[in-house]
Length: 376
Image 1 (cartoon, helix red, strand yellow):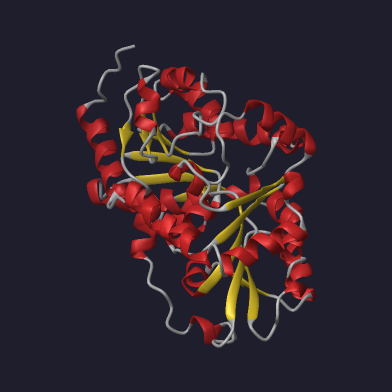
Image 2 (cartoon, rainbow, N blue to C red):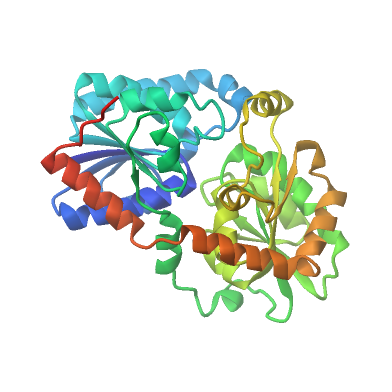
C-alpha cells in the first residue's frame, strides 16, 4: 500500500521513522512519500520537504510566515491528491496537520493520526473537530484515551515511542574521546531546541551561566542540530563551548545535569535520568495568548505526566541568568536525588515497549480489515 506521512519536527521525524520500519514488517512492499527529515530518509521512500522548512513556533511567528505556510500547505494538498495514497499518517504537528486532515478526509483518503495534538492542554473543544476529520487516532500519553472518551471518540493508546527509541540506542564507547571531552570533568549539557526560533531566542541566555561555574570541574556542551544554520551556534563557539551535532543521546548518557528548552527533549532527558532545568521563551504576543488559553499547570512533559513539579520550569520573565544559575545548582546537589527518584516513579507510570510495532500493526489491520465505526 501507499503511505503518505507528515512530520513537522525533529522528534516527529524520529518517531515516524520507527513507525515506517514497523509498517514494512507488516507490508514489505509499502511505498512511502513524506514530509520529514533524515531519520525517515534512512528508512526509504521520497522526501518531499524537510521539516525545517515548515516548522514555525508561536502565534506571532506563524503569522509572519503565513504566506510560506499556505504555499506549503497548498502544495501538500495537491501532492496527496495526485499521489493517491491508501492512507495519510499525520505525526503530531497539529497546526499544519489538522488542516490537511480537514481537506483530505472528505475527498476519500483515510486519515490516521499518530501522536495526538495536545488538545487537553488548551482549546479542548478541538477534540470534536478532530473526531470528524481523523479516521483513527493513536495516542501516546496514558491519560489521553480517557480524555477523548469524554468527547465520544474511541482512540488507541499505543504507549510512548521514546521508550522504543531509547531502548534501541547503543551508546558510543568512544564518545568522549571522539569529541575531545575531558573524562575528568562533569558535563552540563545545553539542549536549546531543534527550531530556529527556539535556538535564537533561548540559547544565548542559557550560555550566560557558564562563567558562574568552575571550568576545572565542569564542561558545558551544546547539543546542536545539523539542519539549522551553523551561525546560530557562534555565540557558544566564541565562549569555547563545544557544539556536538546529532549525538544527543550519547551526550545524555554522560551528562551530570542539563538545561533544556521545553519540548520532547525534556522527557528524553528525564528518561536518561539527568536532572534538568526547563526553559522557555517566546514573543510577548504569543505568550499572552498561550497564557490565556492554557488549561494545564505545567509546560514540560515531565511535570505534565507526573502531575507535579519534578523539574523547575523557568518561563518567559523567570528565565534569567540568576534564576537559571540557582536552579541548575540545585540539580547538582540538594535536589538531585529527589529529581532522580521522581523520574523513576514517572517512568514506572508510562513505561511501554513496542509502541511503534503496536501502532503499525493496528494501522495495517484497520487498512486491510476495516476501521471500527465510531458511535457519536
